[in-house]
Amino acid sequence: MAAQAFTRNYRDHSNDTGYQFEFHCDKCGNGFRSTFQASALGVGSKIAKGLGSLFGGSKLWGAGVAADHLKDGLRGSGWDDAFKKAIGEIKPKFHQCTRCGNWVCPDVCWNESRNLCEACAPDLAEEAAHHQAQIASQQIADKMRNADLVEGIDVKAAMVSACPHCKARLAAGAKFCAGCGKPVSASAVPSKKFCSGCGTQLPGGAKFCSGCGTSAEG
Image (cartoon, rainbow, N blue to C red; front, side, top):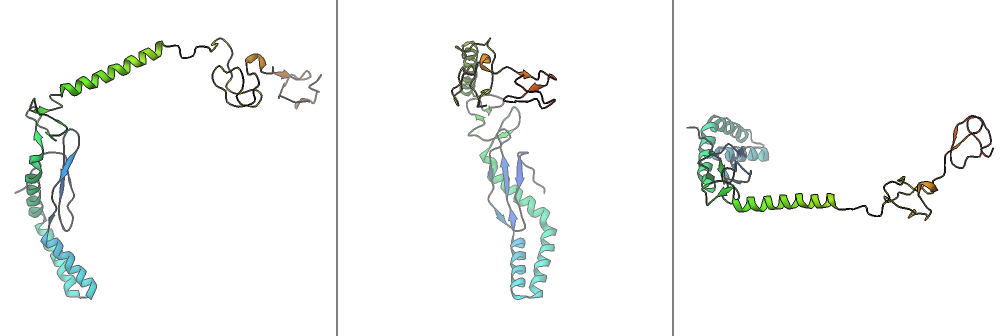
């Protein structure tokens, strides 16, 4: 007779040598793994094949193959029996909520005082702590928004992100470069120069125009 899982959250870890199952809480996912149940046919098949490989005996190897076929034929009932036994072992470790029907772990997801899972009957102390922390976080954010964190920075002054002299990165509102010590205010930034012959913008330090060759000093 086929067995039915007492929770929809389970994993089958069975292999050729036996059966083992892992059942999980419907709420948090924590769980328990059942005791491994060895399959006599599976173990016998492994031993027969191993001996056949070691001694080169075709009869022993054939016995192992035959055991595999027999094991496959009995796999359905063997699996069902093992699964039913695993349920009997693990089921007492969970509680079923009579409101939602979920099976949950008693240590984390069960409200003992309400006799319901915490999804249906949240723990009030946990909820109070949660909301208190959330509101405190929001209040901190509000205070930070209202606090002047840029006092001393002239927000109307033109800002530059890198020193015009050595190209070092600058802190917001910096008046002098921490790398070379030179002033970095917008007024200290060299003005753009253009060729008097063709109007091409000249790069800093250029002595002649790259477009027409006119002297930059002219």
